[in-house]
Length: 454
Image (tube, rainbow, N blue to C red; front, top):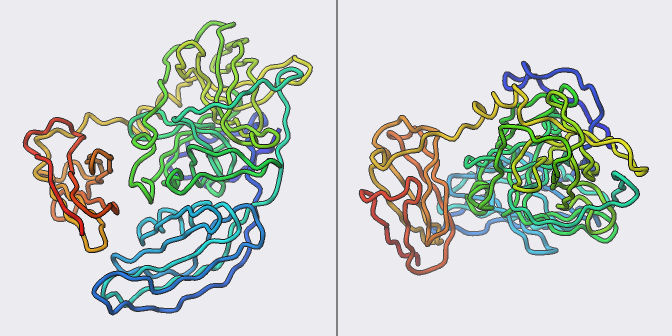
C-alpha cells in the first residue's frame, strides 16, 4: 500500500466536496528529486527575415533515468518557440509562450539524462530569452507487489482510452468526446502532484524504473478538476487536460477511444475487469495491465471485488468484463496473498459523481454548420500551416471545432477575437495539402481549402 500525500487547495471547484479521508488508498507516487540548475541565454534578437535557431545548449541531469526541464525567466516573442530534445531517443517537444504557461513552465518527461534546449526565434524578433533554473529528475527504483491470492494474475494490456497519471502515480481514463478523464478523488486532491497524463506507456526498464512515452503522448493538466475524497464509496475525481503540444490533438482525438459509463450496478458474482498502471517487478512496473475477477458485494456506493490491483491502480475504471461498461472507480486495496479480503471502489451511481459528470465537462449539443462562416488556410515559409475558422457570432466562445489536414484532425479553439475566431497551427511537409472541416460534419457551405507549403 502506498500512502496518500494530502495537500488540497480548497478551490471553488472542490471545496464543497472535500471530506475526511476514511481509508488508506494506493497511488504510487513517481520517485523524483528537484535539483537546482543554472542556464541563461540572455536576451537574443533575430534580425533575419526567417525564423532561425539563436541559442542551443545541452542540459545534463547527471546519469538519471529521466528528467523534466524547469524554466525560470523566459521571453518568447510572438512566433518564437523553445524546442527540447532528448539525446537518448530523439523525442522532441515544442513550447510557445502559451503552451509553456499551460505546462506550468516545465517540459514534458524525457527519457535519459541529457536534453538539448533550443531557442528558435521568429523573424525580426528582439525579445527572446530562456532560463533553466531547476530540473525534475527521476530516481532508479523498482516496484513492489501484492495481490488477491498467492499469484499476481495481471497481464499486459493495450487499451487506448487508459492512461497513467503523474506525478501522483495513479490511473485514469477518457470518458467522453471532450477528452475529460475519470480517476480517484485521492489522486486529484493534491494540485502539487497532479501534473501530466501519459498514454501509450512503454515497458519499464528491467529494474522497474519507469520509461516515458514521447511528448506526443503526454498531456498537461489544465488546472480544472472536481473531486471528492471521503473514503470508500465516496472517492472519485474528474480532470481535463490541454491539447498536445506536438499534435494539437486532445486525447480522444489522438486515441480514438473512450469508456462507456454505466448507469446501474450488476449483481454480486458478476465478473469485473480492471485495467491500470499498478506497480510490479521489472518491465511491467507501472505499465498498463489488467485482471478480471468477481464482484463480491455492493453496499450503497461501495463496491468490493477480488480483482488483482497494486499501488498505482488507484483511479482505474472498474468495468463489467462482458461488455466493458464502467460501474465504478478503483480506490482501495484490501486483498491479501492468503486469498481473503477484497479490493474496493466507488460506484458510478454515487450522487455527487453523477452530478459532476453532468456539469464538469458536458458534451455540448454541437456546433451547427450554419454557425460556421468560413474557413481559411495559409502556410508560412517554415511550413507551419495555419487553419483559421470564423463563426457567425460569439456564442460559441470557448468551444472547439475540428478541422483535418490531409485527414489528420486538429482542434480549432474558438476565442473572442474580432468576433468568434478559431486558429490552429501545425508543421507540415512541403507540397500540397487539403484542409477539411470535420466537426461539425457535412457542411456544404464550408468547402475544403487547398494550400501549398514551400
